[in-house]
Image (cartoon, rainbow, N blue to C red):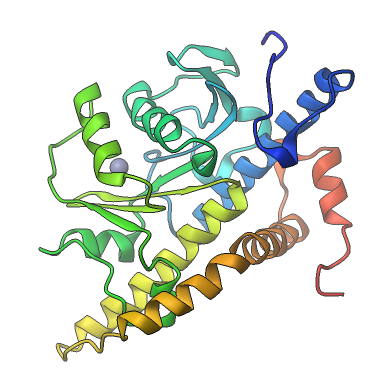
Length: 282
Ligand SMILES: [Zn+2]
């Protein structure tokens, strides 16, 4: 069993009083498990998953990470299935194996970007990944959905094969910088977010944007770039609304999923509460 987490919360919204810290920490860890499991299942639903590969991770306390055990399909991930790891990849809670080499990449991004990267989601989702196999490895700013990422997309332009060492983690972190999205040439994408909702929302809109771009490119006709000044102003307006929109999007999808499917091991008080939560639009 895991020892009590000594310092669970770093963001202001998740800060706890000393007296209530242990119980509240357990509750928040439970909620983090439920949110991340929901993100795995939603990624499966939208076709972002691939076999038993790729990873979505969440830092739930300093140097404490949730990760799917290797071998589970994303469609079957439940809150209680997720492994809790320390920074060395030791399993503190959960059953199964951790894919450590991939975990080290995620850990490096978590540590480099801090609170903004409490969630690090890596996928080979098809349309965004299709852009990474093009020579320029870029998301062109040609549609409103693309502008959600204006100035926040970095490119890692060299493919070095499978990632099995710390040098590759360092190169990925250097290429990522403080961006929110990394296009990894010949490979896939990584997005970061402070919450599972924000990271999932970024994956969703990145794939939507890439889908439109790849459809447009398939015509063979030239793309129509948006003026950079308009890109910047639109992106700025979207940025302020992003956490709220992401939360509402994630909650709506989760309500639908809970209504329509057996949620398996994710069942619990938090999910029951969300099942009966009033609509944010009421
Ligand atoms: Zn990958």
